[in-house]
Image 1 (cartoon, helix red, strand yellow):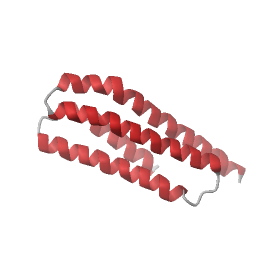
Image 2: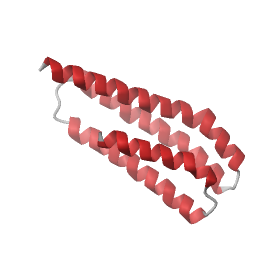
Image 3: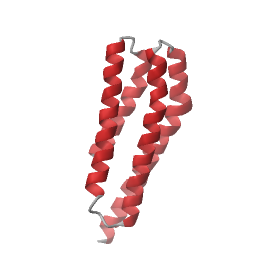
Length: 122
């Protein structure tokens, strides 16, 4: 649950970046995004290190990979916003961030389903 909340907060940071005109605040927002995503990745790795269910580990790995792709896609938005190219930042939200965001959401859904199935089988 903490991972999902952190990811949702990171998504909100990216979506609000084009409207941030204060460069210090934009940098703080980007640092917050990285901290949230790093916490999510660390949490997934720590909590699943002892889990022996291969399908749960595979689902966790998919989330970590999707988070990395989302983080890469969000960089473009922050770069455009920092250069005051808001129309380009907004376009990047649609063209690169939205697909990466959807991949993270799909990976989270698959993980929850896999974990639920594994817990039910025990």
